[in-house]
Image (cartoon, rainbow, N blue to C red; front, top):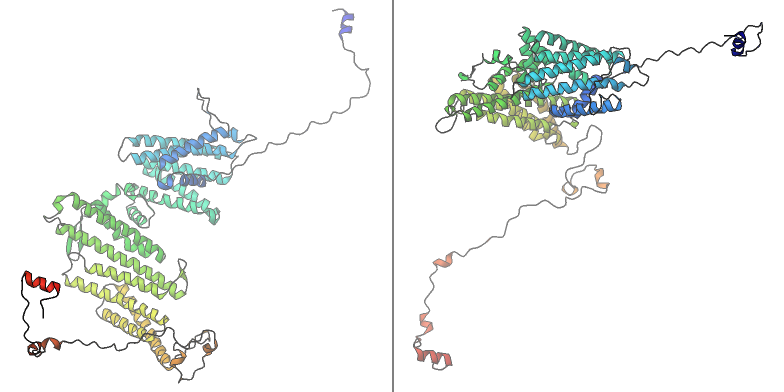
Length: 599
């Protein structure tokens, strides 16, 4: 290129100067990126969803449908579509999405809801596998898928975008899902390890929460206990089966029949006969055997209960099982004609089993009512309310009346009507409870200021108690209560006697508050007695009782003339004369009709 052309092509610039160029301002510093921190209460979220969408009634299919609709709404709101209508393109929630500027904590709920949907499907298949065993393979497949989604949730929660509580919740949830899978696969040791890990994590969370938030975590810990004991039994801990029976008695295990399908075979097979009052009774139905096994440990369980209310709940659960056992025996009699006689009644062996179960039901009912009495007596002595109501002696009288009705049913037990020893025992038990009933009826009469009647009932209660103690009841607890009752009767009897004497001397008694009670007699009946009665000067003085009381008066006598039939009257023929009779016939009729022809 020529030099002139090169010079012409160069742009014209400013004239050169010897001064240095001005300093450029430093570029602005970049702000550090903020880290999103999310908190998600996994257990509370799934528990609320389960209770509101079917699991309160065991409807896993409804809960599964809810999870499907919920995940669709989440993907739409969070803009995480998996392709379009024609093509499917999987899109999972990743840690990068949690670190975005506009990240939402609902991103963590997507894998949680997916895991819950698989778990609900598995529980639905478990219900259906009772009739279709092949569905157990599909059940295990669904639980494996739930474990995959639970691990995705844990990976997201372990990122720096979640706080410590969320990480612990995720660890517990993953451990529980894996424990459920291993439990179905009958891998008892891994199942026990995972369930125990979940229990420990929930216990740690429980210690850091307020009382309002602790309830669902306590419930979850209680739900894990039966499964852990069952795993321990299958691993080799023989004492675990007793703990399971105890949990069932406390109502902690709702589905023990399915949970203990194998455990029953080891102990129920050993219970073939029961000996009761010198009779050997064969136990046939399996449900009845299971009830009798639980009955062996019921007394120990009741003794370990902390209060009367817990003991009452234990006995009520046992009573429900007893009714089921009786129904099982009756159903077997209906189904098997060999167990019935020609008249249709059960055979003696089956009837003895029914009588024994009925005896257990009635005696446990009396025990339950006795704990109700103890609870009411404690509230009466401490002057506290029971279930929002004030306890009165009348309530205790009603409870003892119910107990006596149950004792009467024991007396008419089938097959023991002619057993003199049995009838004597029941009569003594009835006398013992009659003593308590008389005592509390007397307490009621004391509140009505009927001293004489109360004194008489105290005397009768003392007679019943003395008679029972002299013949030594077999029930030691009842004997101890009768001893305490005799001491109470002595003091109450003296008090009633003193009150009755004071009432005879002075009709107007002074209460503890210093106020005088009104005279029961009206003024007209005590005109000859001097007493200061301020009630006479009030607007409603007790002067005369209106309406007056009815009095018996003699009625007007009635006279009946009975002698008239036996009186012979004189003849009057001589005074009547001899009158000829009128002729008969047509001529006589005409004469009589026209008024002529007579005398």
